[in-house]
Amino acid sequence: MFPVKRMRRLRRTSKIREMVRETSLTKNDLIYPIFIDETIDEKTEIKAMPGQYRLPLQEVRDEALELVSLGIPAVILFGIPRKKDALGSEAYNSNGIIQKAIKEIKDEVGDDLVLITDVCLCEYTDHGHCGIVKGEKVLNDPTLDLLAKMAVTHAEAGADIVAPSDMMDGRVSAVRNALDDAGFTETIIMSYAAKYASAFYGPFREAASSTPAFGDRKSYQMDCGNSDEALLEVKMDLEEGADIVMVKPALSYLDIIYRVKNEFKVPVAAYNVSGEYSMIKAASEEGFIDERKIALEVLTSIKRAGADFILTYFAKDASRWLE
Ligand code: PBG
Image 1 (cartoon, helix red, strand yellow):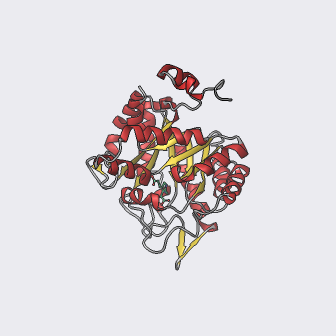
Image 2 (cartoon, helix red, strand yellow):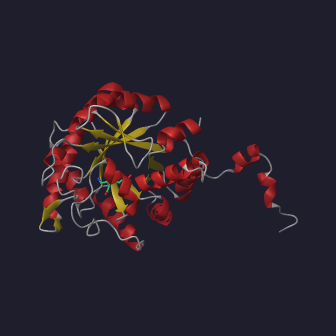
Image 3 (cartoon, helix red, strand yellow):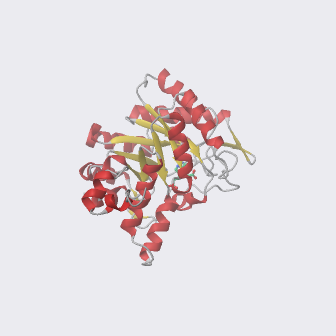
């Protein structure tokens, strides 16, 4: 004890601090989300997410090359189709916007970039819900077939990882079975296992035009007060065949990341979502906080909580900052 023990000894210089740092953030921890929009011809900034853009298909090759050159290992794709309908049919059209984008990216960079796709109907349905709707109800079981079909079209186009984000019960086994039946036994499933009904997704819904036309997502996404339930969600997804599980959002859910990692010891992803990005951007544009320091602190804390990697709109900036 003090005065024999002095904690400040190991904080004296920056080299010493680096030597004893328990958690370090590297470029390898970052996954960059991109939005590919079939309705535009030019790169368009997302208002609520300064510095983030929707891209037309013709820009995805360059985007992929940029990510590879920055040393970012993976990308997750979201699509905005020209036409939306009640069943989200563009989501599982083998010639849809995402399926085309996957082919372009794989053709350009091959295995130099891990290609992840979001599997969910909300960007493709005219009502904006993540499943088939009857009256005001989102139907679980009939939705599974559509999600499974969507995942198979992504695998056919060349996706390395499919990421079901819809929160229907049983989707992971539906997707796993469909992939296996189609011969895609090697396609990885990263499930959005503990996905909360969160107001932090607000800016994303502007970016992906996926705001529900009525109601909210509380009948399928989790309640923010729950934590044991997250462990059950994760357990079920793992039993159904998930290879990687995700916690989303990240910053207000660090305890969930911690519990999931401790309990299951499997690869855990965390999604540092749109609202978490926008808050930092807005406050730093006002000069209230230091963007770079805050973003790196946040990303480090997500890793420290137990995440193996982080989906984040800061991926490009962070990869430069970490040089
Ligand atoms: C659903 C999906 C959402 C996000 C990722 N996948 C939105 C939602 O569930 O409403 C949110 C990501 C973010 O906020 O950055 N397809």
